[in-house]
Image (cartoon, rainbow, N blue to C red; front, top):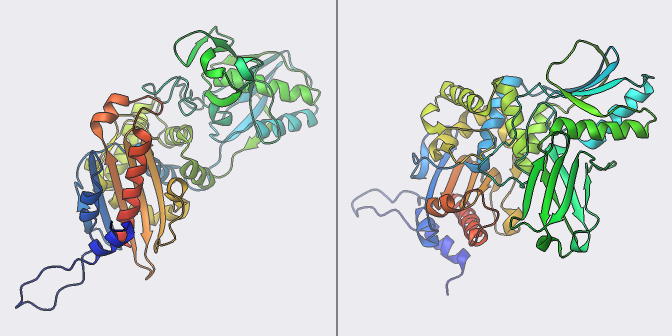
Length: 455
């Protein structure tokens, strides 16, 4: 049996056939087509390699085919946010005093943590503020969205609510002992993990793994008793982010000796004096984290900040208008900023051209993860090129888009989009359907082999 690396080397070395009377043969064409054909991955594989500088397609197949972008769309969102907001933009979470009321004012900071709120509580206590008669939370800096991806399952942590008040990516940490006893829900941070009193969980006998309801003041989760036979934990999405943040802040203030009333949610922000404030990291740092960890909520939040739109659909249209200004309007049909929507489509040629032009100009390569395939496939000791790229994964969708730098210093932008459309449609929104792990691993191996050919 021929070794995989030997097969790739043989494919790469195939000469270009030329008539005997012609000049000496051109250099070998390092094309990925034979590798794709040999892999036999079920579905479509669309790809483009574009050598830099320039916009000519050095290697391509199905370059204009509309494909689901999955999380590679976050690279587009990052460029859009940088263009509209600038690298140093920050987002402030404030405490204002309005008469006898203190208000926790969410500024749409997508990376606000429990530890950040703890520092804010300490600053508020140090300012000597008296206990207020009322305590409120305002999240109107961004639109109120109950789920960022309604087709996805309700219990998935990457599908929370969104508003201008975002805490811990609007997730809460659920833990339980054997048999589902002693369930705990925490706003988990690095140094502080207070209990989340506005969210409860209990084992139940329902068929579904999780069920959710709310009674106006609490979120109530029921967890299938069969799934809690052994001790475990997981993150759950938060659907009432203002109440969640207010509850956590009340606990943190109590630890500082400042007693606040139960939080209430307000729609209109009253005028008042700012008595404490916390600022987010600059946008460039936020985007680097978004691209590294592929945080969907961050993508939707910064996209909405950049567009100023009142809902996700209008925000996606605004980003499409910006893409049209970059000469890429025909290659993108978008419904969101994170890539979770099943309705978004991109082409490999559009993605590669965007990366090669605006992407390079904005410094996108420095924001992308180094050698991202190593995370799933392990390090390849034979890899010759440096890869900085964004992955994108949904059920039976596996994409990779970014930059390749060869040992001789030559660089390329590329996009590889793999989709088994039939199985994707049949399993949309499901958590780990049958066959998805092996298909995804095969797709990532194919992507690595294509990059080896291009290197």
